[in-house]
Image (cartoon, rainbow, N blue to C red; front, side, top):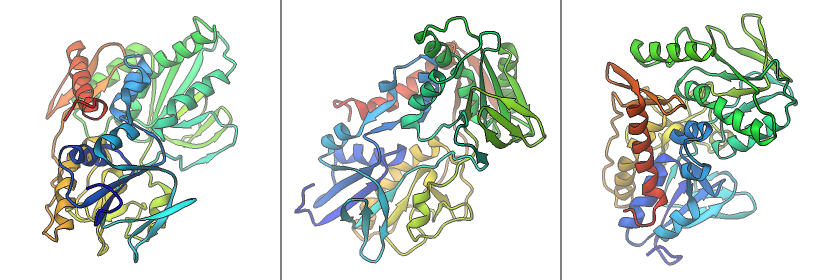
Length: 387
């Protein structure tokens, strides 16, 4: 049913949280007379929820990765590794660099967002954006290896962005730096962390209780937190702030904001002011085409939904239902974003901070809860016996 003789083709562009759910459903109950084609720039997908744990040494790199070839093989799907250059919307084709176009009867676009700095950055800057996550560890490891560390100054890390991602990285990056320095026989070098956030409060959208726990933890560790300011320029190891101050960083990690991948602007589909693809409440493009947009890549026309992986995960079942419905000419089902969700932040020391509703909490048991949730989620895509 999933070969070249199939009458219809479903294409998944990008295999992130939402589209990976479609591949898993295809393993269990493929759509009749339809083939599945998956397109990705990378052979591995990374689970963002485990990235801080890998930095902290809680996990090995492969534990947060999904082998896309193995996953597609289980589904009888075709995996294309390559660069998409655009869409031919009249012919319903995906255009690929150096490869034949792929026709689709329905497509789901889920290529996420980027964290490209919107400031001037010199070629020799110590700045490393957190995305693409598939190469993040390799890029920061190279930056550490290339740095001549002065023991009396320590290794200076600056994290830009005070949301959940930036906070977790600020918690967990010292462990990674220490392991990397020790591997190059640079021992007993302290890691000094500074976190910069444009807003007046860390972890926007969370309770005062969680925010207070984060601030207290940073205070205990000596992490310097600079609020109400941002970076305007990065030249070499020097970051110029909007309030006129300058910071010297051996490694500057950029976690601030979500920006659209350049490809989205070349697809000739409706976009919002930032450049993300506009969708209705069924996850479908506003254009009259069988194109769905999921995760960070899409912006709902009438709802404000944060660019966060937890929403992408919840979109999976709705997307699966609507792919089936659009192929059968049936009305599409609306997606209703959740109002609240469990928030868990890895502190990198075997403990975690959490929040559910208006209640915040922390401790080793919170880390065990986060570990269990993340491990169970990955198991669905890594374990061939999981269904």
